[in-house]
Length: 425
Image (cartoon, rainbow, N blue to C red; front, side, top):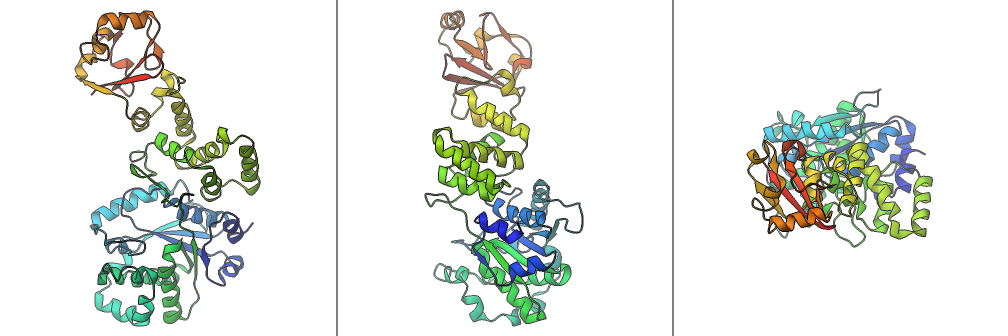
């Protein structure tokens, strides 16, 4: 299956300029996707473009990721209701390095002539004077051409600065630069980028007489029409410090049946046969959520690791009475805290557990989890108290730092469902 056929069956093509498929079938083609480095992590909204590049490289073509150090200083008006805050050079450079590190999980930056490359448009825009730009670039694109773009039309009523109005020219010049310097013939992106991308192909045509191409994928939405990738907490990030592997896994596990089938095509490398077989099995027993489990596994392993996936699966069973102390110890701190979000927690002085300290004191006088030592002892004797998923058999048990999860947390379980978290630190 060639690159275009692959994207077609996955539902990943929204618009494609005539001649694109022929160009890709003719020779190894260099293609790029632009990412504005407005944060030091990608989020799952970026994954669509990253998967485009991954399929491109797997098909033998050369992927280029353009980190918009210059365009990130302007802000793309496409799909935005208001102008964004502008970032300084130091922040943009930091974000660029963090993004490249994440991209190495998806793209091969080392092997062969089709190895991936990362470029920053600040490198060629920083020395470009305003007069040079309007002479060498601006004169080739008419105002009426720019005004006809949807990204401009939609903002005229609410207000559009000249800075944002000029964005499509800067992005167009990026395509021209990569066309001339790296023989880049194709730009890809979300469907909201179509206007900006074809400005680039038009600039290349008018300035060099060359031919370049455009391909966009649909903007991903949920089956209920709401925005993909957003939760009550905000974006679902690829950086584990911003979105823990457990919360990341849970996001995919909780999508609808309809979305799960669609997302399996877009966000995994599973074949048509594998996805078809999974859909068939799911339809027999939809309550088992086989599609969601498959999706959550594939994406969590791809973005994080098999170990993070396994820890997330085990952790998700903890609240249902399963799981062990070893399960909890394997979780990173972010995943552990996400798992017990909403559980009552109590802070104690860290020095309290630097040496053996009576558990009975910790759960009564120090935290009030038990109203009295008598209540505490009765529950221990009845086999109803657990510490870090292990049953407490001795009411005179002591706690020290070696028993804490992540050297900081003690999980107390009263009965089957009542959890409390003691934080020493």
